[in-house]
Amino acid sequence: MTSRGALARVIRSAAEQSAAAAAEVCELCAAPVAGEHPHLLETAVAEVRCVCRPCSVLFAGDGAGEGRYKLVPRRRVRLPPVDTALLGVPVGLVFFVPRSDGTVTAQGPSPAGAMRWEVDAAAWRRLAERCPPLASVTLDVEALLVNTVRGLDEHWIVPVDDCYRMVALVRREWRGLSGGGRVWPAVEEFFAALTERS
Figure: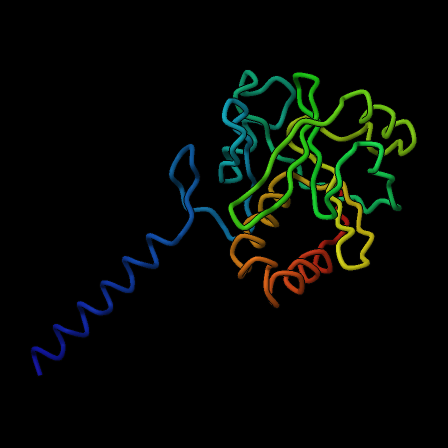
C-alpha cells in the first residue's frame, strides 16, 4: 500500500513538473502567461518573445524599449486580392515584412522553417500605392500574408507572430517531398480561423 502510494506521488509529481515546464512564462520577468498573450519582437535578432500583459505595457509607446523591442500589434485586416506579382515572388504562400531599415523581406514556409529573401523596396512602395492599407503596416511587426495555393486568394495584414505560427504549422505537418496529405488542409484551416480585429 505504501509503495503504491509512493509510486502515485512520483507519477503525479512528474506530471506536475512536465506541466510546469510546458507552461509558458514571460521572457522578461518569468511570470506565467495566459494562452493568449502579447509578444515582443526583439529587433536585433528578429525573434518573437512571449511577455505578460504588465511587461507589454512598458513597450506600448513609440520609442519604448529604445528600439531593442517592439510590441507586436494584434490587428488583422482582410484585404481584397493584391497583385503581389509586382514583388517578383513566385510563391503562393508567403509573407512580406517591411523593415525599419527600408528593406522588405519575403518569407515562405518550408519543411526546414522559413525561407527568406529581400524584395525590391520600390516595388513594395508601388504596391502600397495600389493598395493603400499596405501603407499602414507597422514596420518590423506586421506583415502582408498571402495564400494563393490550391485556388485560394487570401490576403491579410497580420501581426508577425501569426506568420511565424503558420511557418511552424507547415514545418510540423509537412511529410515527404510534396508535403503529404496533412499540410495543405492544415494551412486552409489556419486561414479559415483568421478573424479581423482592430
